[in-house]
Image 1: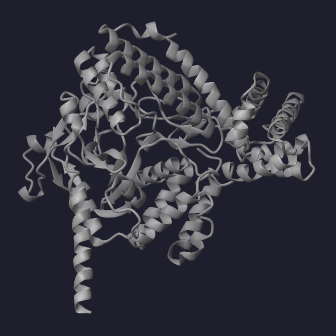
Image 2 (image 1 turned 45 degrees about the vertical axis):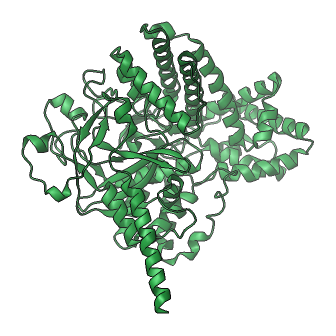
Image 3 (image 1 turned 180 degrees about the vertical axis):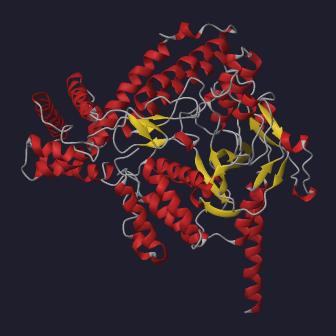
Amino acid sequence: MRRSNRKIKKAGKTRAKSVYSRFARINGKHPFKTAVPNGFVDYAVRARRGGKLFYFNFDLAEEIGLIPRGGRQVMTKALSRAVLDTFSLQIINEYDITHGVKIPKEDVRAHRYMATRYLQMQHPDKKGLTSGDGRSIWNGSFKGPHGRWDISSCGSGVTRLSPATAIEKRYFKTGDKNASYGSGRLDLSDGVCAALMSDIFHRNQIRTERTLAVIAYDDGTCITVRAGKNLLRPAHFFMHLKRGDYPGLKRAVDYHIARQVENKEWPSIRASGTKYRDMLERITLEFAKAAAQFESEYIFCWMEWDGDNILADAGIIDYGSVRQFGLFHHEYRYDDVDRLSTSITEQKNKAKYLVQTFAQLTDFLIGGKKKSLKAFKNHRSIRRFERIFEQAKDEALLYRIGFDKNAQALLLRSAQDRETVREFRAVLRYFERAKAKKGRHAVADGINWDAIFCVRDILRELPPLYLSGTNPIPPEQFIGILQSEYASSADVRISRSRREKMARFQRAYGRLVQRAADMTGRTTDAVLREIRERSALINRYSRVTGDAIIRVAGRMVQEWKVLSTDALHHMFRDFVEEQILRPESPSATAASGRHAKRRKTRGALYAMLNTVRKYREGL
């Protein structure tokens, strides 16, 4: 028995040492430093004491290769120590140096960590001379079994690239709360919101950076550790483009392409002109599809001319201004201190503008001469963007109704059927865009003009009503299903025009169901039964919104004070899995009932799910 126990202890120590050695490879070194030597500011870093592990994404850690696959997802002391030693860091910034801040030698790490430079509209120069990672550092690059990953940390101290430094022309002490964008810290609740939303989006096949860990501190701040196969933004390229820096632009773009090839996202192409044109085609495709998906899923992601708030593969990054709406609140604008954001309907044109800029960038790389951006207003990539966007919107509409991929393809095969799809899109958009009569008003973080109809509700309720024999649905019942809590009696008055639109909605819906039945050799009832099952999940009554996630994150912070890390992890995972709304996902129905068995977290989880129901129509 003693020998056996010794073997078990030895094996445990070996595994712990192996895990620690993997994390130790994340030490500030990154190939971007060599590839783009003028693309970053290097910082010495120190250990930040007092951190406690709030959340760790075991699934992501397995995917990256930081921990073995298939093991028990338990937070051991060795794993917790490895995470904290690797990521609980604070930069030694210019303020520290000029003020002679004393730092124990044992706290200073051997390698330097970069804050990357990129274009940002918050900065006065608008050329990327002073802008970039204002409170983040790149921890490193990790080569795992499924590719190379970038890993960065947000909340690790204020850098010279923050807007506050550029605007006030002075360096800031990390933790200074007297200047906008000048503290270098991240609130714990904001970090938890980002972790929750990024995991929910990833599980629902929305491209996004992902949160590996959240480290909490007693002052209510945190560090979020973010991971992605490639965390470069368009802004990393546009900085060089705006300045006409051909060598810098070429180095940055060549690095990006090589990274995509290494991760087997793109093919290897040797000819320079061909590989740059291939890049433009892929970026056009990705941004057109993303813009269509964001609009269809009611995701507000502030895209702008600088290419800062989006990844180069059109994935979501920086969740501070990202929202998922319950209704199509197309008048909402985020208040970013000195400016209001774009709206959700303006995202398409912003994405198209980014593609136009990439067309200019590609032409510059191939020809060596930078032309005016206006010269690319009607570039073929812009026309291609429009075609892809419309196709993606058609597919998204059919998916939202509940048609599977096969039915979607069949319904988009002929011009006549596509015309029916577009007709249904138009009348559905009328109901989505209907607004309350009370007009525009202030909300917690911006302004809005409330939407009044919940289209998801009518898409969910139509199939069972039709199967029960209620077809068509009378106008009063139809409007009653659509009506949201934002609608007054005057808002839902049934005019002659609105009555006709309800009839058109149902006629187009019926034609699509009938065509799907004809083309698949089934009855309309069989098609409706399948749609009913799929739509019940896709258009679930309780769907998380930005308003809900803020409150859920606050509840998790409260529960963290009394729960173990493992219990909180299970609650986090159970909550996320309740928000997987894709029938194709193996986890879509797996969470149902699982949380009932977790007595320690059951009450808190039910309370959070009730919060989702309460705020399901919000911002």
